[in-house]
Image 1 (spheres, rainbow, N blue to C red):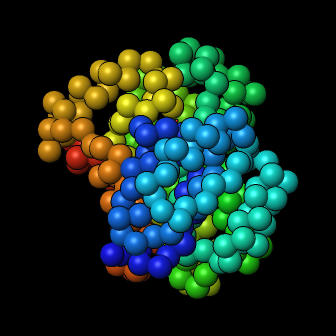
Image 2 (image 1 turned 135 degrees about the vertical axis):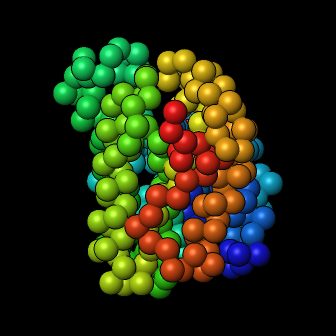
Length: 257
Ligand SMILES: NC(=O)c1ccc[n+]([C@@H]2O[C@H](COP(=O)([O-])OP(=O)(O)OC[C@H]3O[C@@H](n4cnc5c(N)ncnc54)[C@H](O)[C@@H]3O)[C@@H](O)[C@H]2O)c1
């Protein structure tokens, strides 16, 4: 029970394939009390059904994690209704479809800004709002989700690779800032998983095949495996770790040709 009695906010649950769902499952099984944010009021019944097995959970609509006013409003409500929390998981990303289908060189300024705003800046905003609203307990842990496309060229990942590079760098700067208060900030770099977001990436199936072929463990990862790594990073077991990108990818990232 690594997270016994800990309150964890999980941002970005969409369906049972979501990485956020795998993280929720692992955190819940490790004793956490869960607070979810999700997009779209119309999804409320679906989300409540999805998380019904996680007893005592709360849900809040957050339509845009990159919007200062919305994040402030939702975090204020979360704090009022639940008190301070011990961790926040940020599992949010978005890029325009055309920017994942065309060659990277054709990325529009608007598409570039959008991907970075939603996928990277929203994490900075999350950390700042949580701090400003005094929402985090001592020793709180913040975790975000990234991908290998931040440092290597993967056809079709395009502008999302740039956003993930910004996100990973933000993890390091946030870790330095919040470290003064004993709080930690890390990223899990998950191997490819067939989620709704991943469907937007061209030839995603071939990436999965390649991982099976070349990763040291010769298998793809599951959302539960990624969830277990997030649980570790949220827990005191990892209290010597901050500012890191921890790969949960069957070892794929270490391979050369
Ligand atoms: N699936 C993969 O292969 C993979 C690999 C590594 C990292 N990741 C990362 O994991 C995280 C979760 O993605 P996933 O694969 O579980 O897909 P998903 O589609 O299940 O989750 C993405 C979530 O982002 C939310 N979202 C998008 N734009 C938003 C906005 N403006 N404001 C608030 N929420 C917004 C969606 O509602 C959704 O809940 C993302 O950061 C993704 O880049 C995914």
